[in-house]
Image 1: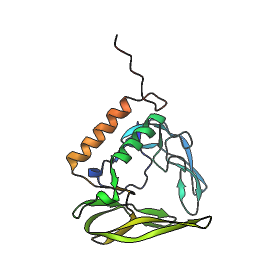
Image 2 (image 1 turned 45 degrees about the vertical axis):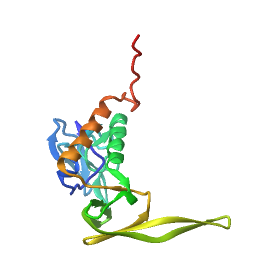
Image 3 (image 1 turned 60 degrees about the vertical axis):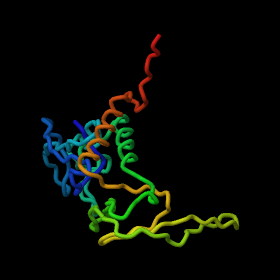
Length: 205
């Protein structure tokens, strides 16, 4: 099975997230609203190598609370957790999607990440950049010494972002470019050991 750490996914497939559902044959017991129910594990078939969540046995649900319901904290409700190799490959893809903020151009599309806090949530949004300009520097004082950090303001349709000039920002690319990044990440995963380290290549005599 394959998994990903994201739950309640609302991203587009163009961005590299796969949302297929597959069903395991096991039927472990889980709790919902203090009642024992028999549930069929539902695994989200996602991009990188994963294994069945050891906490919820692939159901995606565990104990109940008033804020997050019965969603399993370990797998985030996906029913699976990334292996060490999968984590490294996921991070490789995440970094490959980023560019420094000062390399963005008007017309580029970046991802404004959503959030969930209890019952309050905001979905991820694609923002088309309409204006880029310098912003007042940020300042930090330590032991009486003040340091300034150059900032940049990135404005788009319905959203804006002010950040450090070299801060990583995720750019949304064409399907072809995104597919190339995913293929590179999967190839990278194939080059890793189970511990997430690059395999050593034998020297040619």
